[in-house]
Image 1 (spheres, rainbow, N blue to C red):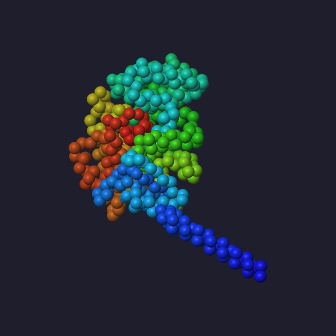
Image 2: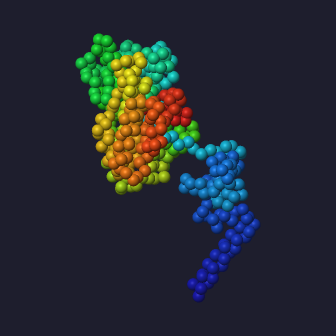
Image 3: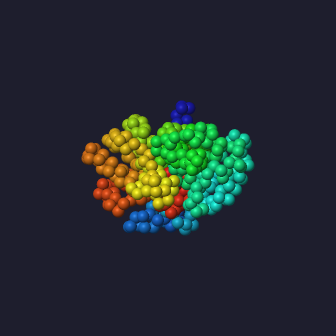
Length: 455
């Protein structure tokens, strides 16, 4: 009997609760979606905005609903309001403009973030300013600490290249390494040269140059793969520093409207091919699992490691999460124009015996590209000079004739200087010219407006 009375009481209470909810919804029609549409409610609703849609039929809208990072609905306020639930965050923009985020097709994200915390030499307009900036930066260093930085551009102050003698007197106790804005040349002081074992008897490595005086003494400037001589003696960058660099650079990207980036990694001639892979495991996966990813990234890895990327594709697919996408592989054909290491058919006007540097063995490059392309990896090759671009276009054409019947989507990064005949070849061969506008460069490893610098 007691059990029967308890059941009646439970049913009565439940009926009263349901009735109360029904009356509430009846009196508050704008809140009916709280129950009936909870499963389809948006995470975010942007209202009272001027939203550019890029869609011809509705170029502008006033409201937008988003769930799980994807747009659910866009249109008028009334059209979107039905997707508001009790957990929906509503953002009233009071008429402000909303645009799609920029996608940057070529960045070095972690390198950029690291440089943001180092000695900044971009924009320096004279030797005196260069020396003064270094003098101020070394004040905070303990003896033996490395002084790292970059962004200098000798073209700004008339073309004269810096050398170790500029800064040796003020950096006697601190090894120095400052990379040029293009990343293909760096300046070491005499202490750093000593630690690296570079003397007047040192030989140029393959794909690199140790610049010397007329007497054969090193000037402190190292080009392309010669930079590895100093890079190998610089203390390893900690995981924490690289994680901070990602967050720092990502915030700067968002401030400039950049929401997605194709990250070419920290690999360049003379650097370790393992750096990009360490950043994937130590930085990107860490940020993803801890909810610290602020922008989406598409990652490229050194071509030398193509089989490793193929195995990861087969195991995990191309999308590791909604934030991290595995792109392809990258290699280098030549150096850079500013470092006189871009490869040309004709010699440099100010250096008549110099045609630039071919930094990769093209037999190896061809075989690695064939193998990578056959497994479905997108291949990107850095080429600045006209000869380097011609050589890469020839290489891609040969690979295409071997691996027939697929969309290769080959990329040439920068494609900066071309002979007239090469321009049409990009279209005929369906090769992507991944161009970064040169005149907007303003820092090493830094942003364009809104892009990062290439190297």
